[in-house]
Length: 141
Image 1: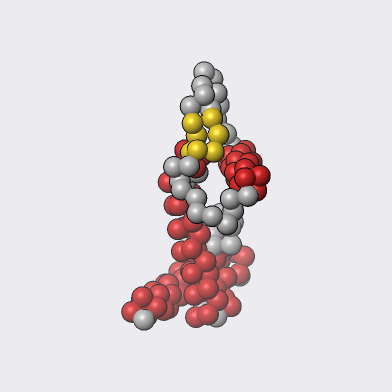
Image 2: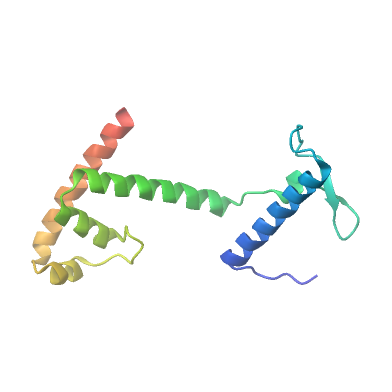
């Protein structure tokens, strides 16, 4: 049996196809309104073995990690927009790649903003302190 590696897009496409097949099955059986068990047989595989919903539906660990990372990133971006001024927000976003770009060095940021690297460092330190304080307040609430 040949194993092939799937790209993320291919895996998502296949997942969508499987989900659509499952929905089509339910619609054809008119069982959408009744209870469904994860152990219900929905089809058979190539060898004639029964396939259940549990066999078909799965969540890989990487997906859970990506969702958690995305949630943390969204919370951080919200905190940046709420508690930092425009310059601090720009420096933090560039420095840590918060807007999807690669992180910049302090020297690169200094050149872009027309300020010294040490000033970028001071602004970054001050902004991180503000973010830490805000995030810790959120956790206490």
